[in-house]
Image 1 (cartoon, rainbow, N blue to C red):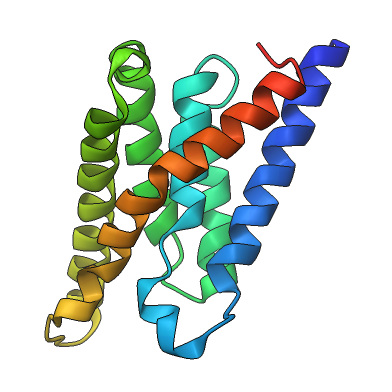
Image 2: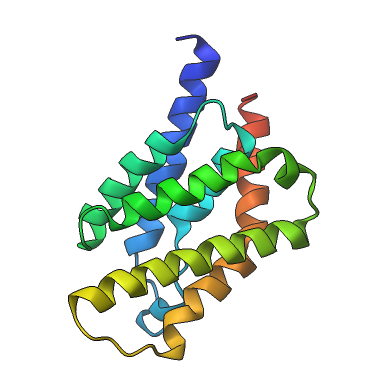
Length: 162
């Protein structure tokens, strides 16, 4: 493993770790309903930026860690993250060329699919009613995507990860 590959792996692990902290951290309890899925946003970025280094298996592994971290059904986030990472890698050449608004639309669709899968698996376990607040993380994640993109791109450029 070369020095640049090692640096890329370290930055990937650090950004995923920070996203996991943001996922479970509660600064304002009244705003928890708006907390986006930071992990999937970071995975989408790395899948678009470096698809040859971070792929579906990485997303699956991180999804299993997220399942344990959040106490959800084992494999739920692993499936979601693997699917989203697959679609991101599959479309990474187009997504790099898209303006930010179209990237936000892609992120919106990924987050919407993620929340739909979560609702479906929770509905199989017990009858659930779908409230409007269930979809707030989709909206907040879409709105915060430009910030995530800019911050992670800055980190990647400053670390000279190609």
